[in-house]
Length: 287
Image (cartoon, rainbow, N blue to C red; front, side, top):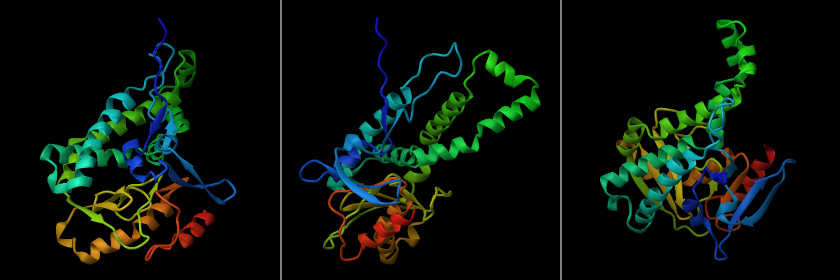
């Protein structure tokens, strides 16, 4: 019997969300930062962007371990994204008040996943678990442990990878985190200014206003369509016209400044009535 092939193309921005940015030809406009600092663009299908091969793969930790597994992708990410896609359509068509309490909780779990599932976030977790430091600390506590690691074929990188992924799943499925998000004030802003539209980046969800995720979660922003921005605020008393306007008009700038590799648009990036895309692209050159 042949071995079952595991999935390897793991999207950290789900395809149901990417599909909202397709143009009339069914393509995304992908602006990519090249190695030399130049910005190029290409058109591509949703399946061709916002993924990393094996991003959520669990690898064998020693010689007797089970083969590599894609259970996190299939049992967590895919199932969550399938449910979130249905809720997303209701939010787009009818607004956030049209979803049930159960759906609100599921969408909160999805928002938690968008915080935790990015390559940048996973790298942060792995960097904290420095492999050399782990081996050194293990050897200090148990002299000769490094030799046992080699003798029995332990793969420390796989151990760190798997531990990080399991921590990510625990964070995504954390009842407390989802409940905190579900209790926030949810608003969907629809933009209709001439030439204005929202973009996605490889770090599309913005927590607070920091370059990296900060807690507690005061406010969260995520574009859910080129003309829709979802705002979540911890304190409903601060949600007024000025607050909404400021977060709406700075979303594209924040996303593009934070993006490490590319920006996804539904059309060519030309200046709108408020957003000066040419200036933002010039700033991307500097990184």
